[in-house]
Image 1: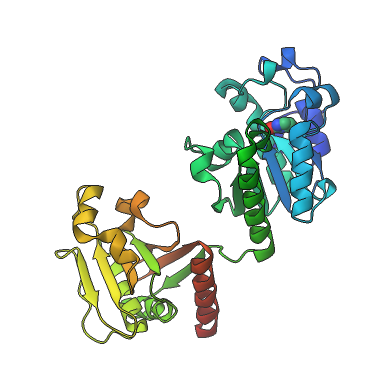
Image 2 (image 1 turned 120 degrees about the horizontal axis):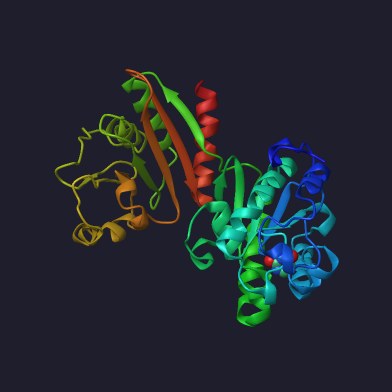
Length: 352
Ligand code: URA
């Protein structure tokens, strides 16, 4: 028996022992069998469901009922078998009548899930449905808005998908679930392309040069969202991007204009949202229309209106780390942005 907490358990076996005949929340009194989770203890892909249902409660195995059969079908669709993945749930005991797990139950149970994730150490976690997704992404946003995108938490890639049960209740969800698994396979196949790219520059000139390397890779329709405090170097970076786009004239800060247009090999739409008070004012400058126009867009203070930024974009966060030192973190969102970030990673490695 391991004394201490889940962190003291050094493998899944000792964690299972530590969980024991759990009665840390009221579900312990109503369940038949605790469903710890199962599969490859070193799987690269881990699934997290919601809670055991009736069949799981009777057997102690996750996802063996109707939703589990569909999960097997989805796994086969992406060329995987159950033995190759690890499957766990947000809560390990069946809520009576399959009701939603309650916050107090989730709070009591998820320290064990957190330790399972650390011990299995998957590269990719696919969260099945709302509860697992909200737990992993620490949000209250619904699954419909979160599915279909790739997230990163603690160095792991998180791919939220619909819960298989959603397709059992409503057949029109079935194709959506298969779409989700197609995206999951793309994430698995792509490896870690799309990981944040972190670069430190030691002078304004180096920041401009780094921006120039990004600018040289941009094409019409690409969007770069810049964030960082006043003085973090956003305009320097934008000046570099402009150079990379073949723009020769001066590129001043657009603070007082909200938008400046520069003509180069590829036009650059240079926004500055610092002075905007409300998102609806973006309509006055035809923000969304311009992002889709014939140029590449650089948006300073993009983090002021995150919901207005397109799904496909490169987020560039700038931080002051020393008198002249700046840390620049680039996070690509979407396939096109990932390809640009990979190009930038290669050109930065070549320049180092
Ligand atoms: N649904 C879940 O979320 N988990 C299971 O283990 C079974 C059904």
